[in-house]
Length: 185
Image (cartoon, rainbow, N blue to C red; front, side):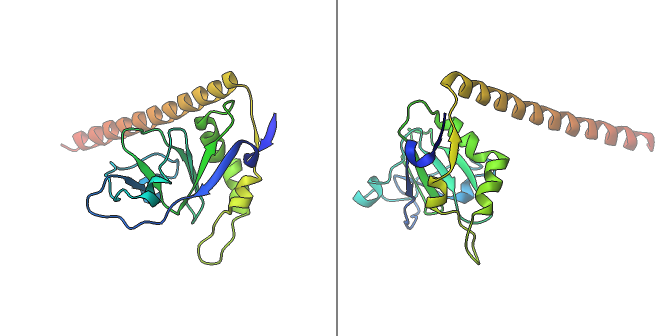
């Protein structure tokens, strides 16, 4: 089955807020993530709780899509221990279809061909931005849940393989450098 995001989700913009030194709620910003949507730093609560902020609290399974600038990516929210809201850098995509896994949607939005398609439709002279309308009309194939899980498992294993290859390469480089330095001693 193929459908558009607007038929299976609601899409809202993040909230604008001023961070404080110590707060009760985490204010997620694009700077907290790498280009693959992985958190790169420890998060600390930096917003005061108020009624405006509470309306925008993220729920487990919400997918964040960084739509502004050159670093577009999707990430899914899974931390229920620390309440958080998304900044205006993000669209918050909330799935309504239980036949779509949030991680699958995240994987799909981060796929290189989808990223290229979305970037081609970005607008703006100084800061390129992907609009809510463009995101809403994005077509997404929805395989059954078992296939989604299989796709995610293969993707996860491929990432592990790449990481292991990098570790092997780093160790090999160290070994060669040590051999070379030992030959001149």
